[in-house]
Every structure is written in C-alpha cells, then in structure tokens.
Length: 460
Image 1 (tube, helix red, strand yellow):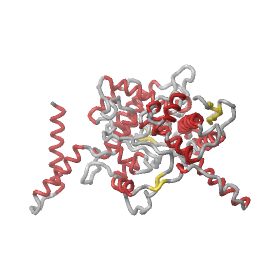
Image 2 (cartoon, rainbow, N blue to C red):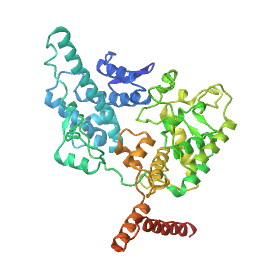
Image 3 (cartoon, one colour):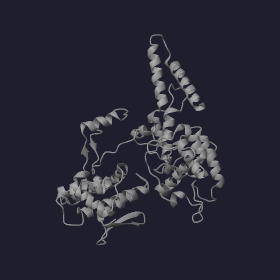
Image 4 (tube, rainbow, N blue to C red):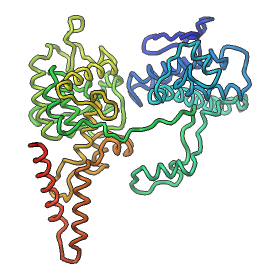
C-alpha cells in the first residue's frame, strides 16, 4: 500500500499514515471492536480479512483525496467513494479518470466481481459499524450531558439502510421459502453501504458428485485428511468445526460425535479455544451422520489414530512437525491455511478421478463435501414410515447448523432424478384418476424403475 501501512499488534491490526506515522483512529477503533467479537459472531480470521480490505479502502481514499488533504465537497467525496467498486473490478481499464489514475498509482490489478464483493463486504462492515458507533456516542452524550453537541455531526449517507424497490422485494419473496407468518416489512430495507455491481450467480450445484464421492474418500492419501473429508461428507460439518473436534467429543462405542456449542454451556473452560471457531447457527450437540460415509469416517479415524503423534492434547488433529510436535493444529495455523492444506489433499485425490466442478472447471473443495451432505440428506435419506425419500428443508437446516433456511436451500438441492420421478408419479396418478389408485404404489413403482435405470447406467 502506498499511503498507509498495516501492522499486527498481538491479535489486533493497526493502521498508520505512511507520511506522518500517525495512527488512523477510525480504523484502529474498528479493528479493536471486531477483534473483541471473535468467537461470538465469526471466526478468528474474519477481523484480519475485514481489516485488510478496509486498509485497502483507506489507501484508495488517500490517493483520491477523500482523506489526507483539504476537505472535499461532500458530494464529490461521496461520488469518489461510490466509485470504489469500479476501482476494484476495472482499475486502469475504468472509463473514469479518477479511478484510472488511482489504480495506476496504487498498482491495483482488477479483480473478478466475486472477489470484489468480498473486499466490499469488509469495507461496508467498517462503514456500518462506524456509523453505529457514531450514533451510540451521540445518544450517550445527549443522555449524560443533556447536550446535542454531536447532533450536527454528519455520517456517510451510503451507510444508511436503503429501502428496497418493489421489484427487489418481489424477487426475494419468489425465491425464499417461508414458514409461519412473515411480517410484511421483513424485507423492506437492505443494509447500507457502497454500491456494488452485479455478480452473476451460478445455477450449477457445487456439491461433490454422488457417484464419485466414495472413490474420492478412498483416494485421499493422508489418514488425517481422509478422516476430516469423511467427517464433512458424513456429518455436514464445516471444515472449521472439524479442526476443533476433540477426542473426548467422539464416542467410538456409540459411533457419535459431539460438537462444542459456541456459548460454552457444556464446557465453559473451552471459551479460549472456541474463539478460533465461527458461530454460524449450529444448535445440535450431536453431529448426525449418514451411511455409508459414517462407517468410512470411523474406519478413517482408526487409521489416523494409529499414526497420530503421541501427545496429551485432547484435540484430535495435531501437528507431526518437529517444531510443534503434538500441538493442536487449531492453534498453530489460521483457518485459511488449514483449509488450503485440506484442499490440496482433496485436489491430489481428484487427479485420478478427473473430477472438476462444472461451475469453476477446478477440483472440488472441502466445502463441496458439505454441499454433498445437504444434497444427500434431501434426496437419499429414507426414514421408515414416510412416504417420500429425503429430509425436509427445516430438518436439514437444523442438521447443518444454518441460521437462515435460505442457506439450506442453496445446499440441499433436489436431484434431477427425484424431481422427474415425482413428476412421473403425479402424471400416472392423474391418468388413473377415478380408478381408486394408491399413490404410494404408483410412487414405489416409479422409483423401482428409476433404480433399475440407474443400475443399467452404472453397468454400461
């Protein structure tokens, strides 16, 4: 960065002006606040990612004159801030002179919209958090001093909540499953922030192909990585949750795994370690695993325990390096590094399978195994006594630890075969209407034909 420099002081990032060496208070207050929230709302890596993105935004503001020089007219400053998305995605190719000049001076390489959205998320979180703190301070001054000394302090208009258009609200309603009574104003406002461009989402499912998942798990070479991959496929855990599993969380006799709750109700002493793990809504204490992946996990666990470094640590996954032998990997590396390590092992296992994601043309990642869990639960899990195969979305939401069922919709997609089978059963029912047909008999016949067709395709 050209105008600012970012350093790490303990667990908290700090930003300074390069020209004067003075600390940038707005950034540093934000960094302190985000660091204190670790373990309550997000993982340990989140403050670092958000602060890195915000530091880049400060560099842009200094370069364009929004900061560090004579005050700009408010409308000019706001327009320059609004160009940040253009700066990220177009840079030197922008049609705006200010953006081109800033990108050239900062040697900024344009990024894809999906990556730009990640950067913008950190910046907008900074803006919204700062606005919230400013309003809290004004209220506190008013209460304590009976003064409106901060009443005239203006905040950034971009950070104010935005009222959605009717078209936006209608689109949300059409794409969202709702249960019970939803308030009429539930989706009327969107969080404020610097506007971003359109990111075209992919309709291609990101779950690992069901027909190749057993081959993948068997091809993972290292016992530790095979154990983690099988745990994600069998239980749908996040990779960050998997790294935090302890030996005492696993009951080999009953073949169950507990997962530590983020509020430390079961183990108050675990709070320090749990700050490494994100809380994203998991409510169940027991991971629900499905066969045959459950058996593969416990077989992989036995293989890993045979070679696991000898240590007193209760954490399951520990280092085998000479420098940190037996130390929990959770404390030695950040989540991004651990996930990259796991994905390298999965990529190597997929070379022989020649498996790539249709969405990215790249090998599937550990997150694809979590997607696979959702698809498997929706399409292949059978509970005795039910007329349909598969769990319901609210059930899968609970198992996967989602706070929002919209997330579950993205994971637990209905398979094409199941959808066609249900449509065919409905069509046959309609054709036999008035002849006292049994819908369950018709459905079973259709699924029997589907099973035969799948067997034939496998044999071909």
